[in-house]
Image (cartoon, rainbow, N blue to C red; front, top):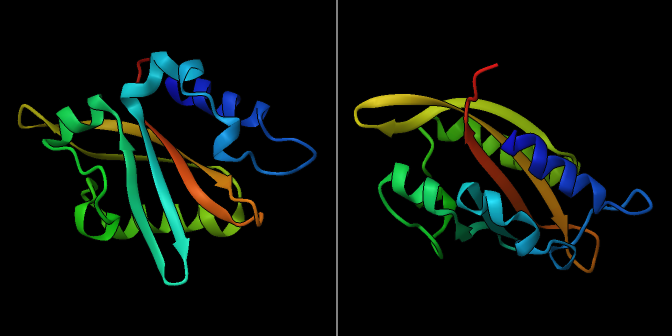
Length: 140
C-alpha cells in the first residue's frame, strides 16, 4: 500500500506529460509514509547520486543514517549493481521503476521489500532527484 500511495501521489503531480519537480512534492502530504522514503540528489556533470533524506524506518533497518553521503559508497542494497541500474533506469527514462529485493537484515532475517523509484525534474527538465519508497512486502 505504501508503494501504491507514493506512486499515485507522484503521478497526480505529473502535469502535461512532464515530470513533477521537487517543489511539486509536499512532505506533509506524505507524512504517513515519510519513514519509508529516500530522496536522492542527482548531478550530471560529473554524475553523482547523493542521499538528501533517508526515512527513519530505512535507517533503523539499515543500521545507520547515510544522509549527505554518496550512494556509491553508502548504499543499503545487498545487490548494488541491480539497485544502481534501477536508479539509472529512472533517471535516464524519466519513468517510474518498480523493483523487489531482500536487502534489509532485521534481527538476522532478511525481509523482502518492494521499492519504487520516481524521477523528479529540475528546471532544465532533466532528472535532478529521485524519490524512492521502500516498504516491506505486505501480505495479500
